[in-house]
Image (cartoon, rainbow, N blue to C red; front, side, top):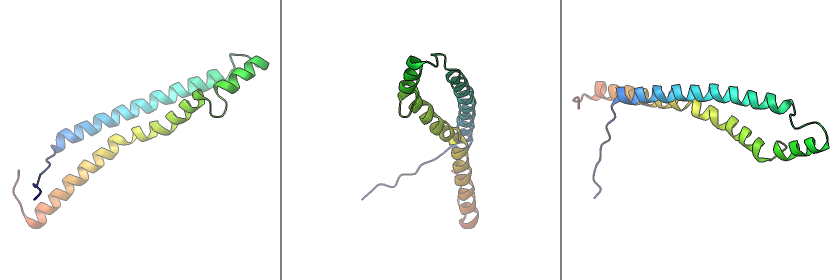
Length: 112
């Protein structure tokens, strides 16, 4: 037979952690936005030159599937996901607490 295990969450601590995670995600998004804008501005100025060697460098640096462009693209996809982690966790905790409260109201129960 399997043993019944219960999981307990301290809602206040979980919400505090979710808020901290949300703040970190917001800071990351702001920082990434500034960094990406700076990188794009610097790259747009073509500091390596607009001659044949400079264009070849750019093609192998930012063109298509090159590593630098891949990093910029992946971060642009990843940062918004990290930004919503805190609010998502907060919503899950609040939903769980609301469900527990509703079950307690409907079916009674003791405080643990």
